[in-house]
Length: 435
Image (cartoon, rainbow, N blue to C red; front, side, top):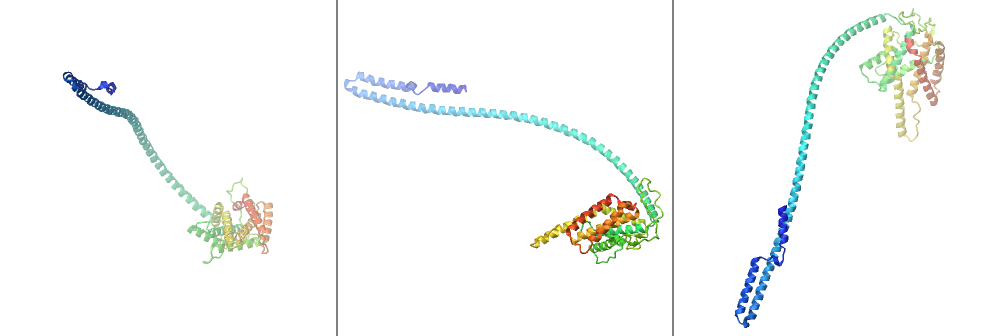
């Protein structure tokens, strides 16, 4: 930079003036002038004009040369200045680039150092995790071995308990098969078999249950237990209608329409029943009863058959078979009303109960009447059971009348039936009858 400034000062000093003319050209001009003057002194005055002309011409030529030299000098100075400015700009750009490169190099060094530190920390963490993983793996392997050993021990104990339970169940079945049912319980469990058969076939018809071998076997067993004659052409819907006909016809009959079979009377209750539990009184059965006899005279044979029906009934109650059937029938009615409305231009009330729903509530009403009759005969809530039996008997006769066509009355009665079933199960009538 100092060298460039010195050159610039020198160029400014040698500015294009007359003083900047080279010494050789100036000496040449002086020499020509002398040479022109010396002959003038020697020659005659006649030749003075020619000499002056020669001197003027020589001076003009010298001036032109000086101008040309000055012009050449100016061009050289301008080119040098441009070259100097360009060199200064390049020097500045180079210096800037050098600084940027130095900064980048510094940043790269710092980044490499930070990355190296991060990698070192990660490597240390990975080693520590690997050590922890090895320790945890050893601990888990030991725990797994202990768990496998304890599971094997529990399995062996469970197998032993299972064998003991099976032996106890076999003994209980053998003991239960020795007991015989009285006439009232035979009628009760016949009705329960019809209830189970009806709702199981209804769920099969509405596709509310997966039909497999177990379901088909249970449906066949319950249908045979109730005593309904079934042919190969019968479907689940026809079986339901046959069960409904038997039970609804029996529920419409007056109190005490059937004779009691006194050949099988229960002498006493079980000795192992808890003393603090309410024991339903079992007076001597009256010669007549409201419960219809079993359609199958050979069933139930013993407590084992009754237990199987009771288990099936409680299973259907647990899966809410009645509620699911009512909901499915309502959905089918609404879907059918939508299809009919779209097919016809008229307006169809989707709230009117279908024939299947009306038949469903007829059956549930009949079931209420028969269960309250069984409770009255068993001495459970005598005042309440008498009143409920009379109420549902009157309702059965009114609602099953052929002249009944009022859809609003059917809806109200359906709500009353739901409340009656809820009341009966709140009082645990069915459970207490089993006990």
